[in-house]
Image 1 (cartoon, one colour):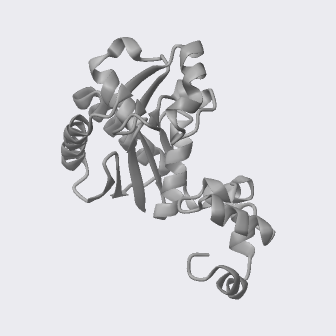
Image 2 (cartoon, rainbow, N blue to C red):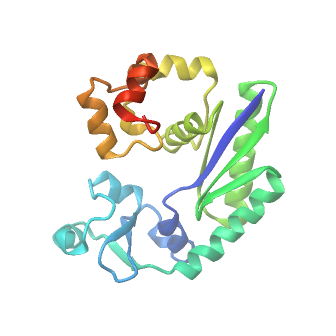
Image 3 (cartoon, rainbow, N blue to C red):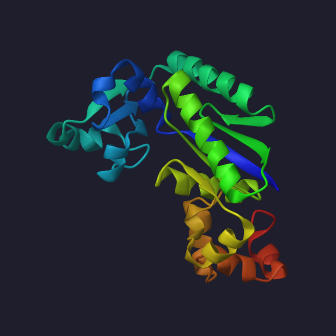
Length: 218
């Protein structure tokens, strides 16, 4: 079967800083925007504290002090260099790939079974982390949208997730639309106003109604 996959570097800017400060692994870290005004990257520890992406730094000064959060100014030249290293390794492992952002790429891969693909993705994860030192997650499914969700699941487990069509169909009633690639806050509110809250709701909604209410984006 042919799968579409996503490889994503975990908490990329923070992981880049930790490459040179391994003592910070497991500790709360944030990276700030170029003018040190806002949070642009958070370690998982900081995410678990409820600190949102993009929050102005002055709003969380007390939280930073009380929780011992370490802050870094952005070093974009460093991040681009490490990104190049990651994707150089990816190129040797996955000839067919599409770089989507500084820390993320889509790819296509064939496998005879879910188990075979999971093993291949785990091997890739180990090799990238061994050669570059950046933690990554890999998800694969039938489409890009489903693969993005699989990667989301992978980040919360052991770093690898494969969703076959049957897996996806079983999950759709439990997946909130806000968890889907491309659904931002405003679109989520519009969906909710129309009575659509899960992926299953969206799939079962007549396409004619979706077109009239949401246009091509919906």
